[in-house]
Image (tube, rainbow, N blue to C red; front, side):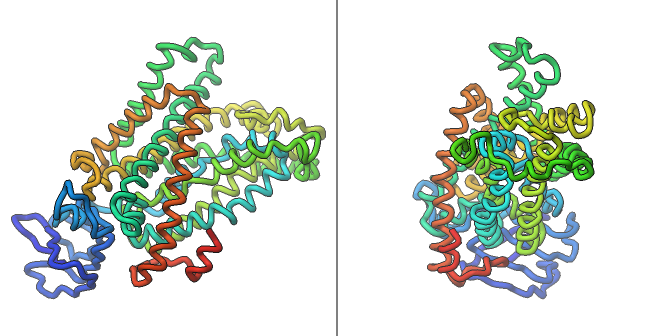
Length: 478
């Protein structure tokens, strides 16, 4: 691999397939200090001494591959993982933006956790927020951190599976994950409408028919336009949304700490004891709020030093997810002498916040819920479109899906994802959840299998971050 400048454009030339860390001394041709390359990942960090028109660290994109396999349809180019050269764009995600985008890819706050309290009471819900991350979230986050830093490219988990099982299963992984993500994202436009109507008029005609379809179309179009502004813009917007939507729960929790008159409520089961626990609802809600850590994989090529940034971001996000779920539940269930957990249904945090801080805090929670869905939509749309663009770079889907806007955002991939969101948005909520959960399970199992296979078959694979367990320990962990 060499970096050459031709007619004002920096080109990455694939001379061979060997890993290398080459010190480049010819400043007149390269103007580089070190070129850190890994042909498997095809996402390169280049330390430059101010090449023309650049500042800071740049990332090579547009050349895809994390595997040396390819489809016959694209011939030798696909075998090399894409084109033989890439273009450079400045890495666009700060560390706080990465943390927030992972947070919104996984949870987005306590919204939706009310049904877990109704199904299992405060005790089982709080235990779930402590134990399930140990059994599921942390292992999934560790796998994502190791393989994302080994394959820091837009296709994310597609690269992992392709390297382990070949391009066919890599494509299937990408297809299942993209469709699952689009189905998940279709829920958020519907939830935004529901919260808007809750603020205005629950009996509004917008609930049904053509007005509802027009609102969903307008919402999806607006949020898609924001997404096309670029990942840096999306990251900054997500930070603002996160602060606004979590602040009322921080206030609620702080005020609740002073007024915890009934901490014994935290040990309550639902009325009727263990026999009355709705285990299916409890586990589904907990799983939904502690899942999708792998969605962050598509952002690995957009941050500086992913080997350091990704594990730290995952750790910060796990803490944020647990605290943002547990503290509002502690506050909401500890202020009443005779709590009725059957009332804890979707949206009950409004009533809990009103009981703790007054009507203004309850209103803020409702507004925050609607705004939070904007953050969830933008994070999911960014992840889905980046993944699709990465698959185009690898030759797995039509090349047109790899086109970027001037801001670096995937153009055609974003529009295709938005179209899927609109089409699935007209299905029922339960039907969408069934689609996304079933597809996600298949995709996640394939990712775990790829992780173990790469540990066994490719122990020499450069892993800037490595799960501190042996292969046998990783099998036990998963």
